[in-house]
Length: 222
Length: 175
Image (cartoon, rainbow over all chains, first blue to last red; front, side, top):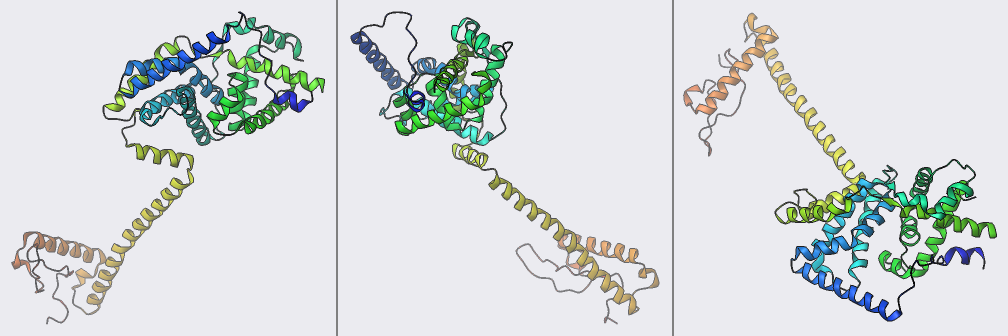
C-alpha cells in the first residue's frame, strides 16, 4: 500500500469496548431514531417548542463541536451554534425532508461558519476550551507526549495549542473535512452531502489537508 | 514510506486531542433554553438574533460585512459630498458678502454713504440691520415696511417682499 492510498483511506476503527449488536438490532435502532426525528420535526413545524427543544438537545453537542473546531474560539462557536438552531427553526417550513434533519442542520451550521470565517479573514483569535481530564489517560495521547515528541517536556496543553494553530492555517474547506472526518468521525458520503460536493472531492481535500498538517506539525510527529 | 505511514498514524492520534476539548461545565444544560428564549424573543417583534431590524436589512449587513470595500466606498463618497456641501456653504455667503461689500464700496465711492458709513464694520452692521428688518417684514407681512419701494409679490404665503439688500442711505439714483 503506497502513501497515497494510506492517506486517502479511512483509518481503521478503534476496537469497540463491547461486542457489536447484531445487524437487525442496529437497523431497527437506526430506523427508530429516524422515525423519532421525523416525528419531532413534524411537531416542531406545527409550533411545538418542546419538540424543537428535543431536537436542539439531540444535536447541540455535535453542531457546537463542529463550529468550535472550525473557529478555535468558544465564544464564536457559542454564538454561531445558537444562530444555527435559530435559523433552522425559522427555516423549518422549507425543510422538505429530502435529507435527514441531522444533515440539513449540519449544512446550516457549516454555511454560517464559513460566512463568519470569510468576514473574520485573517483576524484569528483563539479561545480554546479546556481538555477533558480523560485526555491524560488516553493511551494514544500519553504515548504522544512521552515518547513520540522530541521535546519530552511538552504537555498536552501545548500540543492542543499547536494543533489548533496548525488547523487555523488550513483553508476553510480543508479544515472542514479534517474536522468532520478525522475529529468527528463522519463518513465520506455524509461529508459530501453536507459540503454539497462529490466523494472524490472530499477524499482529495482530506489527503491535501493531512499533508499540510503533517508539514506544520512535523516537530510533534517524529 | 514507513516513516510517512507512521507520521499519518501519529497525526491521527494527535487529532484525538481535539475530541477531548470540552466547553465549560454545564454549558449544554443551558444551551437549548437560550436558543428557545431567543426564538421566542424573535417571534415577539425583534429578530431572534436580538437586532430589531428586518431580515433583508440583516442580510444586507451580512453582505456588506463580507465585502467591506462597498460600504467603505459609499461612506467615502458621502463624506466627500458633505465636505463639498460645507465648502459650498462657506463660500456662498462670502460671495454674497463680497457682492454686498462691492455694492457698499461702490456707494461709498459715489458719495451715497456718509463718512461714518465708509467703515466696513459699520457697513456690515447696517446690512445686518436691514436684513433683520426685511426678515421681520416678510414674516409680519406688513406692507408698510416696503421701505425700498420694491413691488410686493402675491404668493400662496401672502405678500412676500423679494429679498433685496438695502442700505440705510438713499439708494443711488433716487435723488
